[in-house]
Image 1 (tube, rainbow, N blue to C red):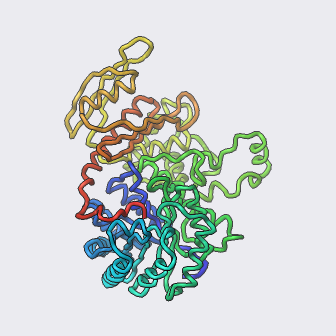
Image 2 (cartoon, helix red, strand yellow):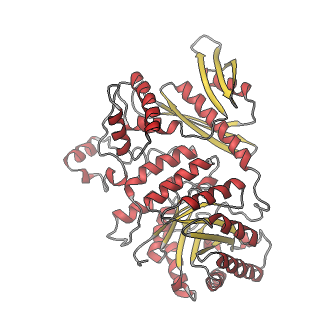
Image 3 (cartoon, rainbow, N blue to C red):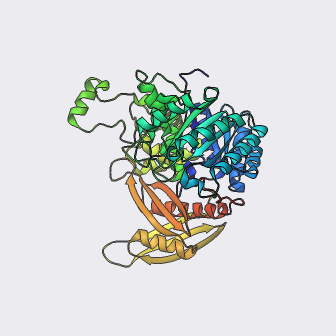
Length: 518
């Protein structure tokens, strides 16, 4: 590896999925891993194999399918975790074990280990991991709040035990860019054997500095960035993959480094992760937000018409956006739809295209123009979890004179069930009807509606978040009928809760150490 290349380590499927409500299905994980592999991501952290049987199966299957990326699994500092991880990644052409332990005073108190006892455990577990896999990454969790002398000591132990990558996590998003760069630089200069390993950075965004801290770490000598698509992750999230990749590409004049990521595929995977996780991308999100390449100010529009470089430092095409939006209509055929899908980064088999074309024609009959965002919504609205509950039919009565009612038919586990229910408005009545047919303990935490495109005939995208006994699930759907979109999003959230129930029986001792924020 050349010294000016930066490895991209994506942890969307591990750290990103730990965002409350972001649980993905097995098939969604496989699809996202395939997209990451195809776009040139160097290492994919596919999951935490011992956490659940579902996580193990996902890591194992991704390891079998990977063509280019190194497939990594997470393991705590004990033999059982490490052995389970090694088993999960075994089919991979290139596999990695990532083991960690919290080294700061606060985290050392969790397993109640002295400094010497923890040092011994690090030596034993990294050695064990290296005996099972020749590619071992080790992380001192909460490194940025660990005493300097102790941090140097344990990193040296990990290197001598066989770690090939040393990751320095800013677990709680506490550090700042100057500190981040200085810490990596000093570690490389101070720790014996540091020149023989790759130093990595893993930053959280609690103070909004994750991307800046990651890039500063690269300036300090780190050659691997841990990140997630859309910045997904615990609390305020992680370093955003799309941000660091494009920052290195656009500002090569001051950061003479490069990645192997194919940037034209960024928009596609951003949208796919948003749909799978149920987390909409904020409109003003850097690189992949809806407004990232939009210009409303008269001055800005005038400048763009004369020279796009006046207000754009990168081309929309560089991140996978079409330069212009050419809307389709009800007279458009399959060839035009396929061409549009190809330009948006979606390839489909003929049977998938036929199904989409039927729904496209139905939408085109209801809308004057079908824009790019409408097409994307059509592609993604049915790519959800396995449907235990499906909407068969819905009719609502609303207006100034009550009662507002919903007549609903659901397919529950293959059996049709119908009911009529009242509520405070059509959406409330619909949700009440769903809950009467399928009682559950989910509490509505979020109900959000936004239009995919402009106009009164626009598709509405609805997000619904439910909480049940600490489990959180988010559902999303789009339709020109807001109430129908609301019903589908609510059902999607319930289906995701069912998935979370199945995943809520983790492996033995999973909560022994707080692995979530690494």
